[in-house]
Every structure is written in structure tokens, then in C-alpha cells.
Length: 102
Image (cartoon, rainbow, N blue to C red):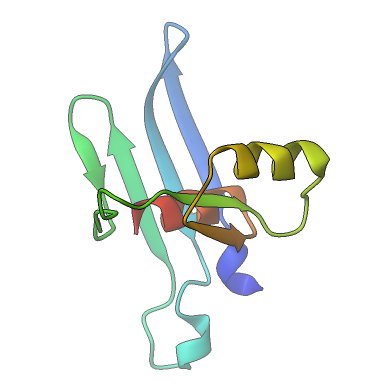
């Protein structure tokens, strides 16, 4: 599950989050030795977010990204309460953000 490995860096100033970085050091590892390994996504308040391709969710769809391995009744009840059209279960906090953005 190397694709789930993420390094997360958050930057705050005056108690407010202003920037963040997500690095996936093993992104593309399954493509072999010739593949570009790893990727970094980042964003900064007032500047934007970079390093990924934004894909809009259709207006009539509700997609929820949640834990692959740490679910419990509270998580399941919360996900079900949102009445999603699709649930994507993945590991790694930064990987969930990637799925949300990609």
C-alpha cells in the first residue's frame, strides 16, 4: 500500500492555517523503474492549490472519501447520514485529500 504513504506539512500563523503540503513519495511506484516517482501537492491561502488536476464532481452527485481501515459505527453512521452516491475508502490522511481533489 505504498500509494497510501503521505508526508503532511501544515503551516499556521497567528493560530490560523495558511499553507499546507502533501507529499506522496511512492506515487507511481507500480509503474516500474522508469516512472517518475513521487509527487507533491501544495496550497497557500490567497495563492491557490497546485500539483494536481482538479476534477469537478457532477452537481447531482455526493461522493464521500473515508477511512479504509479505521472505520467504526460513528464513522459509518456519519457517512450514511450524508446519503452519498459513492463512498471511496482509502488509507492515509493525505491520500484522502488527494482523492477529494483528484
